[in-house]
Length: 270
Image (cartoon, rainbow, N blue to C red; front, side, top):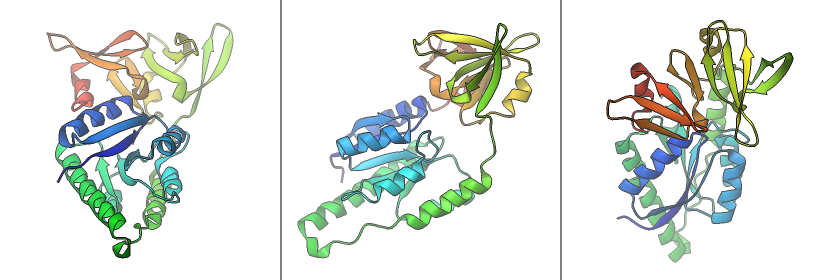
């Protein structure tokens, strides 16, 4: 039986937040998305503000990752139900399957989302019944073991990617945080680095390396090669457009960047 509930989506990928919001509206119309967050600290503030029934929580987020946030949530007087969003492989997913919480594996399929929503609706019904009959109440499932197991898997398998990069602008050398880069564009003998400034304009810098060498050092969950000469920070994509001829492009800070046909599969389902 469907029922009204509230939820927050916490994920650092704007396209995924948008896609999940739309998909939830289809499979669970009674669920109200009261807020979304792009990092763990923002999610923590919004969860305390809105007190949602459910949190869709990405494991890998800046500021405060999903597992650290889950630890804080389980200490709340009435913690929300958690659905973890993960890109981990099948081995790690087994940890979720053996726990009391649910999970969604990227890219999120509608059938798996429907299954998760059905489970959530059942858990919320049980909670409501226990509130009416406190003597039958059961304790909240302890997810401490799951959190510890996923953290161990993350530590063991997490590759080391670039977090900072040295780039030049004129005669000056700048140290740029990778998270501040909106996209890279390969030129003849160098790669241009475009960084977002506080006034929402882009500053161009130069690095003397090939795009292929650079790509091997970037987190593939955060940076996608959308063209043989262009790599974009997924979190900065504002929208994806497709014209009548089937040509696709992404919009970042007002810039229209073409997507090659071979890279269009990256955006399927989003």
